Image (cartoon, rainbow, N blue to C red; front, side):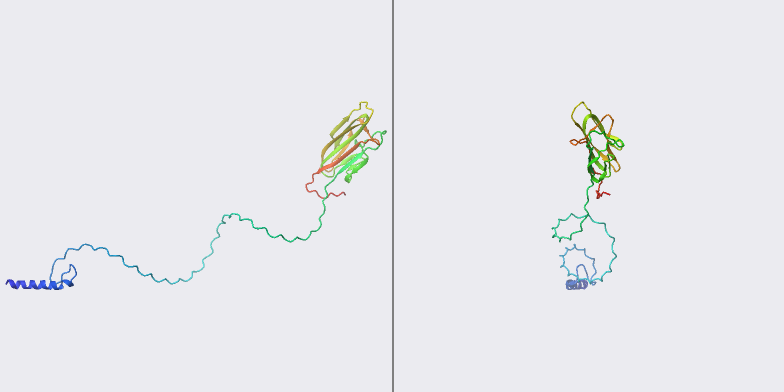
Length: 251
């Protein structure tokens, strides 16, 4: 009875031993039922695999359409100044230009003296002493008949009066447009020989201004002239007010 029950058990063990090499872990064939085994410990990470091959190059894309022109940017900062270049070769001499007009500086000057007459008293003309003998008269600005100088060139002038005084007192004024600009006086002190009285002044004139010599008092009229001594009235332009000096032509 006992051997009858043991025979199936022995058969099962033999089958298990023959199939043990073909079964995976924790798997039991359907011939024998049993409980699953306890899960094993996690395995160790494997070594990294070999690098894969590079993939194929992609196909060239079709050309894109040209984009619209962008807005102009703001001007950039100026760069540093570059070095000066070498001087170029000298050019050829140009043709000579036409001859230009010569500009003449404005002029105005005069000098006159009294006539050689020691016996006749001087006759004034409209309060002016007429120095009737002209020595120099540039452009005719001085009138010997009236004894007056009339300005045509604006600027600064110098006027000088030299008087010989003989046995009389003398007082005279340098006049501009009826106003006294300078006054001179020589007193007679019974000196038996001729003496002199000289004075001068700078005046600024504009066209139309007049300058002359005028005796102040009739009793002080000792102007004298002879063949050996003179009384003179002189004036000349020092500088003109014309900024760009045009050609000064006498009409």
